[in-house]
Length: 363
Image (cartoon, rainbow, N blue to C red; front, side, top):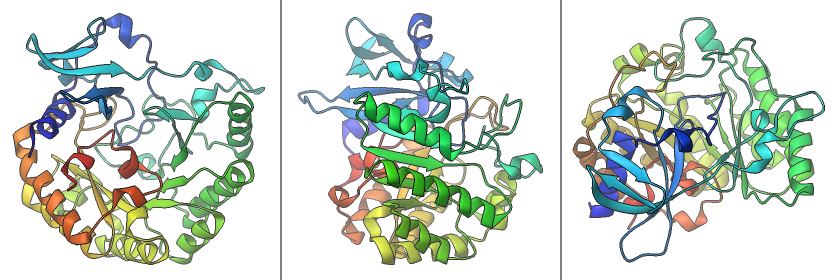
C-alpha cells in the first residue's frame, strides 16, 4: 500500500478537528443513513500532484475530539500532531441549499450535494426496520425526526427543474431510502421517482436498494433509465449480521448475490456494487465478502465504520488504520482478477470514492 492510500485511511478512521467557524458553514444532513454524509468533504492534493483526491471526513462525532488531525484554512493544509500531513481544501456547501419551495420545504431537505456535483436524496426520513425495533445499529436514519415523511415526486421535480433553470451543474443523481416492509410500495417509490427524473434530465441515476424478492423490479428500474445499482451487504458474517442489522439480516446473503449477478448481466459489472463496512467484523470475513462479491460480477465498495451520532453504535470507535491494510490490499488484488475498469463506471459511490480508498488501490 502506498503512502497516500494509508494517509486517506488514517483520515477516514480518525476524523478531523475543525474550528467552530468552519463547522457552522456546514449545516449537516437531516436524513442520515449508515453512510458518511454527515462528514465534511475535502479535496486532497498528494505531494507533487495538482490532481484533487476526494474524501469525506468525520468532523462532528465524539471520537473526533481525540483526532490527531486538524485543518488550517489559511494554509489549506491538514496537520497531524502539528506537522504538515497533506494539502487540502474544503468543498463548500452550495448556496442553493437555502432556496425554498412553495410549500416551505428547503431545497436541502430534498437534495444534498455529495462532493462537488452529485445530487443525493434519501427518499424517506425513516426506515420501517427501525420503527419495528429491527433497524441497523450502525445507522442513524430517523434520529431526531418528528414525523415520518416520504419525499414526493412533485418536490423532486420542482428542485431539479429549478437547479437546471439556475444553470447549477450536477453530473448524477444518487437515490436511497429507508426500507419499507411492503416490497411493492418500496419498488413503486423508486420507479415513480426515476420516471420523474428521466422526464427532466438524462444524467446518470444511481440507486442503493435492498435486493427484491421479485428480480423483475431490477429489470423495470433499468428500463426506466437507472444507470447503476448498489445492493449493500455491509456485513458478511452471519451472526454479526443478525446482531448488528436484525431486519436486513432476514434478507439472505444469497438474495444479495443473486440480485448483484442479475443486475450485472444487464448493466455490466462496472455498474453494480455493494457496500461493505470495514471495522464491524473480523478482517478475514470482510476479505471473504470482497471475493464473494467479485465472484458474482459486482464491485465491493469498502468503507470505514464511522460511529454516527444518533445510531446505536454511536459510542463505538472506528477501526485502526493498520487493521485495514490487508482488506484494501485484498480489494486491489480482487479487482485485478475482475479486470475492473473504473472508467466504465457511470455513477455512484464507486465513481465518487469520497468515502473509501477504493480508487487508490486500483492498478
